[in-house]
Length: 507
Ligand code: HEC
Image (cartoon, rainbow, N blue to C red):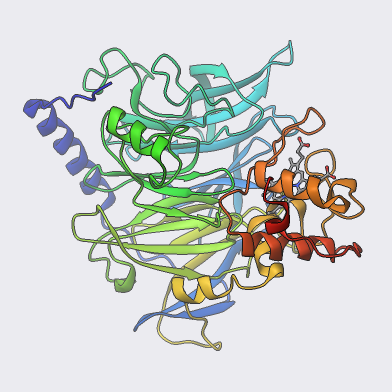
């Protein structure tokens, strides 16, 4: 299928006006806020010094952070709660408690309309079982009134998968909503234009199809995605997303109306014959960047141009990471269609980071996700937390520095570090796995059998015994595989002799 782009000048002018009005709304003069929280860490950039402080704590899996038009931080928790948090004091006000059960039920992303006087709306996505125990994704609109959310209007429901439920919401101008949906772990979805999953959907404030969408009478704005957990728009209406690959190829993409991003036929950059053929036939759009080993990218936000707070991050994408446990700053070229610098901050300092927002003053807020279903560290006593990253006059602690990509790739030399990068997120640091979800690698008959081990790791495995599949690691070089397999065979109490993939080439 060839994608046709519609050119409609009149519509473009209307869209430009809508964006201009957002810019005016967010430029209102406001009194400076006074923050009292202690600085926990300092970060030294080229010239700017940043301070990191904890705004509030004791949250349970915060999923989304929004800087509200009321100058409060709005935060959703997976268990169905939504709070407004005073950024000066950390005090929380509950505005919604949805009747949400345990995972896989859960409240995820939400957005607050910037013009609350005219549109007192909050849109949110949650997952819930119905009476017949069928999982549903629900997109709903609430009205914000007397400091609570009332009057739920369901805009869209669809069956949810066993995983890959995304998702993120964003405004596109003042009168359009974008919803990045996961493929629900069903590979036929992302390329199917009759299905809303594995897509970026675009709708009006009532959830209806706008007449300026790329496919007539369809909510679909772009297709070919796996599991997006980040979505953001710039003041000019440019859209960026982040998404989770399988064992390889996490991505950040620049979104075009009607664009096909290739999944499941293309993962990450095009690097084999099948992918090249699909790219040619479907005119797919490559990612701005792809990462192997994966980093589990979550929320993404745009740090605006000429923001005097942190000039080093002007016109950059800020990306928080679950597996990567930190903040990645991706500086864009002038046109915004290329990443020209990449640096990692706060790595492994606060655990998994899932959500992010930027205040009009240019301060950055991030939240940890250390209580979630796939823990990577023991949650700290006060997890989960919201942290502020903001400019300070001078460092009061020995300042931390960003890590460059060269430094990052040098860390991939040993069996242990390769295991950390490729296997740890599921099988965990002591090879203990996660009950009923990921099998342990200690005392495993498969690990003990050299041939089965190589076969499982190279080809992946998907039995009925586990909810998820083991991804295939055939992309690893023999030398890397040998290091990982022999690390597994001599760790976690395993005392097995070494294997060599070259001697078992058939697998
Ligand atoms: C995304 C999660 C994930 C990652 C990453 C992952 N695995 Fe697995 N692994 C699984 C799951 C799920 C299974 C069980 C699959 C099944 O049987 O259906 C599994 C099964 C296995 C088994 C079989 C264990 C047994 O006793 O049945 C071995 C061995 C294994 N993995 C090794 C590895 C190694 C080595 C790595 C890193 C190169 C790795 N895995 C990375 C999810 C993962």
